[in-house]
Length: 268
Image 1 (cartoon, rainbow, N blue to C red):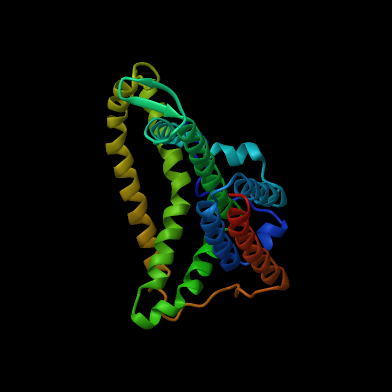
Image 2: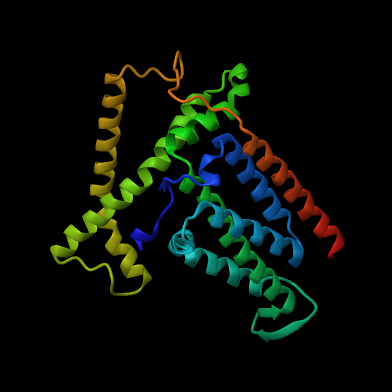
């Protein structure tokens, strides 16, 4: 299960999606999320799905890799779908069981909610798959740079988010090593119910937190030894510039968002 967590991983490539400016990709991800939550009709959902499939195809990242990001939170998605299935009011009742009522409106809401969550995860994960942590930090800092006038710590925020994403795969690998070491000593993480498995995971927390704090201390020493003092006087090896493909992608994003709202009005 831990090996299926792909958040924070970066897959280098030379595709159109990889070459886009990180600021463009951040804006397009926001546009995608707005369009996804604004979609109300089947046609709008179909358009969002087509756009996601096209983006994944252009990035040349395997669909199996994309879908791995859904597996760790599959239980949360299923619980969300079940809650929407039985607690959505509607006129067309399928059956009643005690206080639980299933309606066709609930089935539709549950199916669309599950589809929305899956597409949300896949679309947002595509950003980290195609953007290096350094480029993502620079792009986020430049987008939030107007807030510097309000003395908002833009650089520190962008750096913290980048480091957090960067160390997710490292912590997952460390957890897997700790689990393997405890299994060799007789620990059992695979049998029993959900409660028993959760209790079996508790001994992992102490060594994992110790390892995380040790890595954080080593990182801070490394940054201080390289004279890191935040964003003050910091220069960049590669300056981000908008190219024609970035303007074209932003225009397509605006057209995509407008098309979703139009489909909501036409296909009611």
